[in-house]
Amino acid sequence: MTTVAKGLEGVVAAESAISAIENGMLFYRGIDIDTLAERSNFEEVVYLLWHGRLPKRSELDALRSALLEEARVPDDVLELLRRAPKDAHPMSVLRTAVSALALYDPEADVMTEAANIRKAVRLVAKTPTLIAAWHRLRQGKEPILETESAFTAERFLAMFHGQKPEPEAVEALDKALVLHADHEFNASTFAARVTVGTLADLYSGVVSALGALKGPLHGGANEQVMKMLEEIGTPERVEAVIRETLERKERIMGFGHRVYKQGDPRARHLKRMSERLTAKIGEPHWFQMSEAIEALVGALKGLKPNVDFYSATVYHSLGIPRDFFTPIFAMSRMAGWTAHILEQYADNRLIRPRAEYVGPKNVSYVPIEARG
Image 1: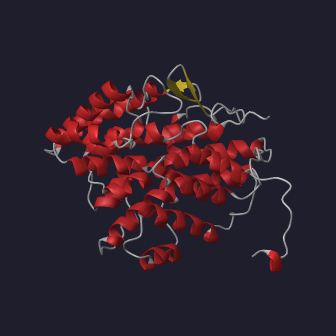
Image 2: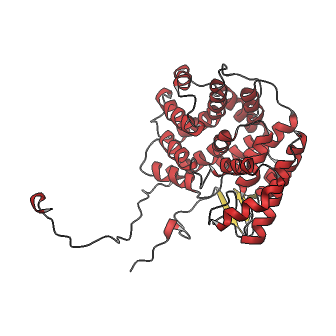
């Protein structure tokens, strides 16, 4: 009988030179995430993921200029956003809008490497604009479509909130974007690679990734973390609520990871940001609750927080509503998705696993008149 790896756990599906998890550490193109989080920036990481090396100053400047130039979205796509139901989930709106972008890209079905890199630039550039535009439209405000900043984090916060962001907020978001930019063969990245493995276009691959990211067991987890914190309300209620949740055999969102057994290396950076930012906005109880939950879940279940846990309070502190947490994740991971799509195209083989059939066999066909 065939050995079944449920959820493909432990299965190595392909070779990749983009990111790796080794000895509990995450690496982008061989550079550890701690170094990148402390010393790099999002645009530099985008270049690294796409091209396999850090950019020269002129290359980084050229990428930032291209991202700024491509940030505006077609008027027809904005009209689509205007017509969307105001209670639609931002991830559903983003998925639909990204799909619509393909209709207005004359290179959508051009499969050369150069054209695919240009499309990757457009997607990384336009995703922040789409997210910010939907936030403002949902509030009954006009989108802000142009800013002078060549830095993705600063440009996004300015479009999202309608004012120049504070440097500390820009730094925090930029670091969060670096931390979320790629993560080996996670569910959404694998979904993208499966799609483009059929030689479907880059937009189709990214839309598949967005669909996978939306789920609460993947990108949607950080949204559920903030919902949990809001429902708990105060640090004094943490122990009772968490114990009751565990007694019901329910999952505590933001804990555990299939690959990391000794803790997610990205989480400690977000934890430090959460402590600083929640104090800055005068709401330190969010961090206090999070720290109490971390200690309790660690003691009772032996689980450590993953990237989703403290990112929730970081994004909240930046004034981002919780149903926009996953779109922010997508804004960052667009860099990794497109890098993996480019890599898949470069050495493609159709991804087509088998299944172990466990249904009935040798079933006789019964004419409809005799089915009783």
